[in-house]
Image (cartoon, rainbow, N blue to C red):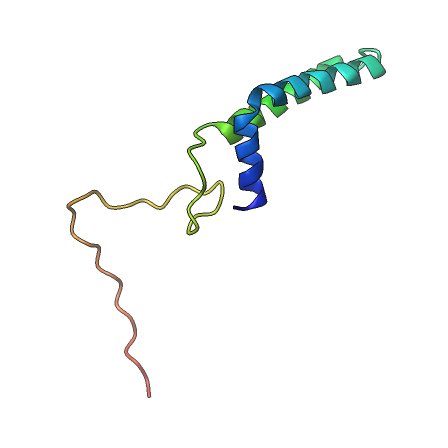
Length: 94
């Protein structure tokens, strides 16, 4: 399992803790800057939450070895349909 897959798995299992950490980090930055950048901090918090949601939505298990993480699974023909013909190859040259 690739590192990114492990991170996504941890995110999906601990989403509530990650959301709490995002809130606490934003609160610390607001406190240190005396609220001067609170609008920007709020935007970053929202973006972080969206990134967590995006990376944990539809987590159904490990990614198959033939598919890269974040890549859509290959489309399969409907069951019962005939196999698709392969494009012709060039004849061998000697």
